[in-house]
Length: 173
Image 1 (cartoon, one colour):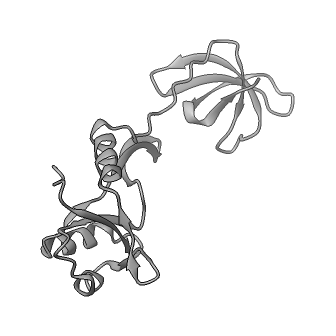
Image 2 (image 1 turned 90 degrees about the vertical axis):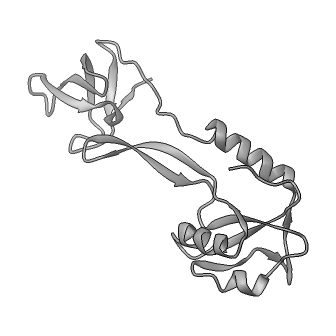
């Protein structure tokens, strides 16, 4: 999406989780919109998935020509809560800020990359999630890219090998 330089930029507050609805409505009013997103890898049901998230939840940027500012119509768009203002004057956002945000958005600068931690066999770790959270363990071997086998002892019993997700472990310093 190319942003025209001759626009005045403003922030519009949206109703909770209604950014997409607000964008569609604002675009019907011929406003240029910008909704910066980022990707994040999350775990759902033991699988890693990539989710698109809003960089500024609850806000959308709109670009309007200086002679075309239909504030009343903007506030009546479905999903819009109001225009961010100082008193009764809508807050103008410098175009350079929007241009910088868009450039960073296109380059993926806001995307969250998963942390890659390497566990060596014999390293002491602490289990951080699940029924054994808080218990110490020792790395036995890596199994694939996202699982690890650890030696685990509970209540002084003999050590057993259990398989855990990498996200469920933390190195002990």
